[in-house]
Length: 342
Ligand code: NAD
Ligand code: LMR
Image (cartoon, protein in one colour):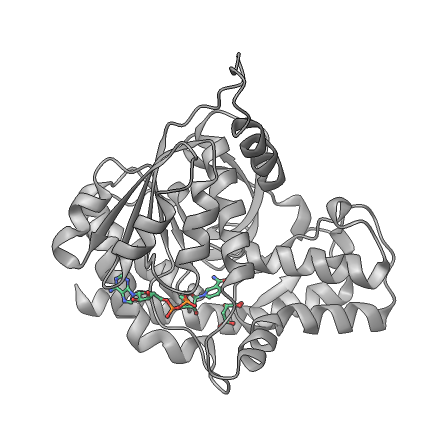
C-alpha cells in the first residue's frame, strides 16, 4: 500500500490536470509522541497518505518544528501542531485514528516490561484524553510494553464508558514485517510474495511467528524454524543492542506503523479486503488479549482469523503453550495497574 502511495504521490506532482484519479483525502489522524524517534518518520509516512486530510501532531516538546517542516510537503493533508497537556483535547477533537508512540524506549539490558513504570502512566493519561475527545476513533498503541499497555488502555476506556474492543489495537505489525524480511532472505524469495502471520504478543517468547502458515507454502527444516523464530523474537533486542543506548527500532517501526495506519484507513474507507495481524481483545485462546490476523472493516475488527492458529506444528503448539503464562501475567499487570489508579 505504501508503494502504491509513493506512486500516486509521484503522479500528483505532475502538473497535468488530474481527471478522476484525485485521491480522497478525508480522514484525520493524530500522532501522540510525534516528535520522538518513531513519531517523526511515522508523521512523514502518514503525510504521504492520499487518505489523510489532517495530520495532528502532539508531543510534550519539539513538535512545532516537526510540524512546520512537514507542512511544506505538497501532499493533501494539513499539518497542525499541539504541545503539552493543555493542547491535547484540541489535538484529538474530530480525529478518526490516533496512533500512540509516546513513551520511553529500551536501552541494552532492559526488557520491554522494564518500561512499564513510566509508559503505563503516559498511555493511561493519553487514552483518557482520547476517551474524552474522540471516543469513536481507532486507537493504535505502539508504546511498550504493548502486552500490558493495551489492557491498560482497555480498562481506561471501560472506566470512561466508551470501550469498543473492535477499535483498540496493539501494533504488532513490525513483527510481521521482520518475519517477512527474514524468511524472504533465508529462502531467497521475492519479498513482496512472503506473508508470515505472527501471533501471541509483542515481547520475547510471546512473539510467535507461525512459519508453517507462511504464504506461499514453504518447507522449513527444524533448524531453520528454530533459527528464524528466535531471530524474529529477538529482533527488537538486535536493534536495541546495535543502537547501543540510543534507543530502539524507530525507522522500521515507523514503516510498520504506517502500513497499519494505511490498512486501517482503507478499511474505514470501505475496502472490504483488509487483513493485518494485531494485538487485540480476543477469544481465540483463553487469554483476553492475543495477537492474530484480523479482518478490518469500517467499525474496526470485523473478524479474528481463527484458522491460522489451528493445525499448528508440534513446535508451534508447544511455543504457544509456553508463551501463555508470560502473556497472561503482562495482561493482568496492566489491568491491575489501571484498576488501582481508578
Ligand atoms: P523516543 O523517546 O524517541 O520518543 C518518544 C516521544 O514520546 C518523545 O518525543 C517524548 O517527548 C514523547 N512523550 C513522552 N511523554 C509523553 C506524553 N506524556 N505525551 C506525549 N508524548 C510524550 O522513543 P521512540 O523510539 O519513539 O519509542 C517510543 C515507544 O515505542 C517506546 O515505548 C518503545 O518501546 C515503543 N516501540 C514499540 C514498538 C512496537 O513494535 N510496538 C517498536 C518500537 C518501539
Ligand atoms: C521492537 O520490537 O523493536 C520494539 O518493541 C522496541 C524494543 O524495545 O525492542
